[in-house]
Image 1 (cartoon, rainbow, N blue to C red):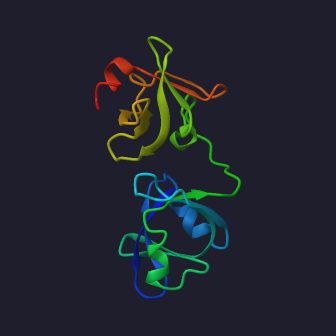
Image 2 (image 1 turned 90 degrees about the horizontal axis):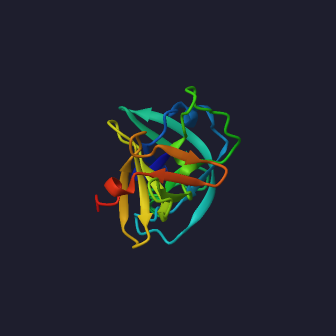
Length: 174
């Protein structure tokens, strides 16, 4: 849904970098639990915490949130850069048939569509205005970014938790 940014002010509010198509969820879910995970890219140590949203507001076009138990800028620095996930029941479903929720693909094995060989695993994604990108950790440990488009990701097998990519193109990008 988002990523925690820097603290704002002295009352424990923090900026959120939105990664969701539904940013209004923060405003409507005061008192609800959210899951925060340390970002693997941000040097996090694998932490995860369930936090209660105490308040959310718009300040000059920026989303500010306040978590229960975080009452100072110093306390927020601990979770700066952490990814925010909805912890409750998720009732949002893609409207278009054949659409996928990109965040559901994290942890899926990545296979080459031409050879069916396992080439890596989906470890994250980047929600960009022009094009979403899958973050794939290749077998070599290198991060490979793959545009999430049908031409490069022609098949997803949810039952087997596999994403098929055109690796002859995608695998050469790193």
